[in-house]
Image (tube, rainbow, N blue to C red; front, side, top):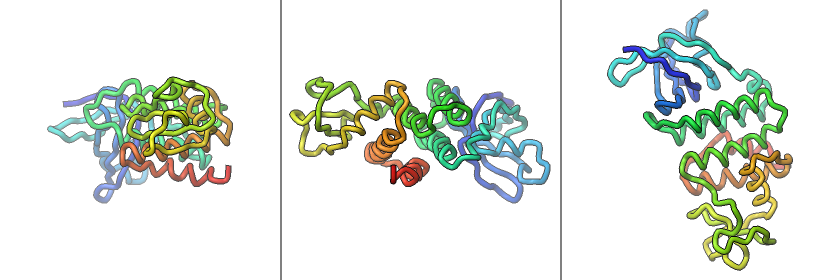
Length: 240
């Protein structure tokens, strides 16, 4: 049986002497694995299809629960992401998020569109890549069932407060009159940055740094998963 699907390569690993196993994010079937035979040989026609960020129309041969790539038509490689270190880690954050939170047969068309548009903005857009990544993560968390409650104090509804507290369990922010003892106080600038990211507004480099550090904390604390690319972005922006 053959199957044609559009997808983005989120990772690739060596297999045997000349093959690779790729993980492909598709809108219909989530993240699926497939083998690319002979792709490590010099002059292999499908070498491009083993590269992370590759957006293509894939043709698979399916036997039982195993897929083999038998053809691919490249849509975009988002090559500029490989020419800038921050852009690369921003793009890698999006791919790693998908790999950690999307499973096989998990239909995710909205998240797929979000990832494609994010990679386009990172590769070809004029907006700062850290701001784009902050916006991506806030939206991606929503699609994945880990949405932040950003509309003000989750208890009383107040939208303006001088001290801000965050509760991992509810994903909510609280004012100084409503916070509980298990909550973590955060910088008000961080809360402002998260609000702007949720609205799709451009963040300053300082705001993006605050937002990404907070989002790294939240993802780890809420899901017990680590996004290594996001941690690296934190390291690259630690002096901002």
